[in-house]
Length: 87
Image (cartoon, rainbow, N blue to C red; front, side):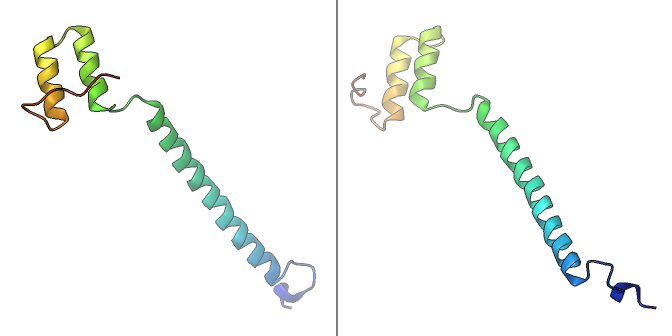
């Protein structure tokens, strides 16, 4: 007696369907994992634009006016020139 050919089972279509279902399931699990881990890293404050960091340090009083202007010139590639206009 052949149990796989008795007419009461799903046959090859069932095996193929279950195999594809498993691929879809694990693909969804992996996709959700990647999506939520990347979202949590985006929610955390990361490095900002250098001008913003420099302005924040100046606002907190960590650096004085001369140092702020010198660093701003260096950031914009003008070590001996004028800082860019604010705005």
